[in-house]
Length: 157
Image 1 (cartoon, rainbow, N blue to C red):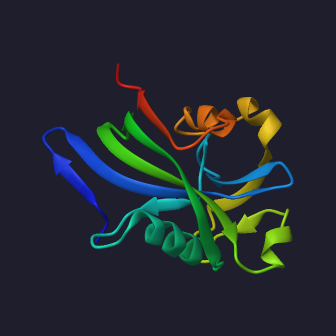
Image 2 (cartoon, rainbow, N blue to C red):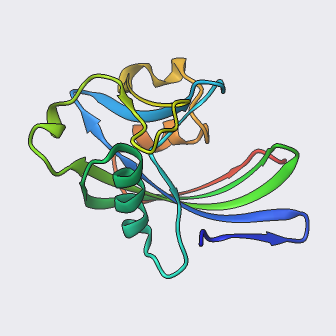
């Protein structure tokens, strides 16, 4: 069971994602029916660590094994989506594919769970300002030179 709770008029989410960078490009996923990109990952399940969540989510979504190299950031994210307000705690980890061949992938990947509307693309780090990445504060995280970083992103203000 995912760690998402309804609290008053908010949804509380615990989420974790991996930052996979190769040749100055970052792997993101996009729902082809939406106008934004996100980092690969998902909600943390009850009894699961944030690192385990990243490993599980990427295995489920891409059928790839990853290793977590280091903790990068925690984001306290407040936003509205589908007429619901969210309070999300978002853990971010530097991650890489374990398999040597997977480390050289540069093409678009597709969801291994059969979700045809999801695709995984490589965006150039130097051009991230040209893309709608959510939460938008992720761009700031990628530009940081020292880690870990703590960001409060409040889109409700």
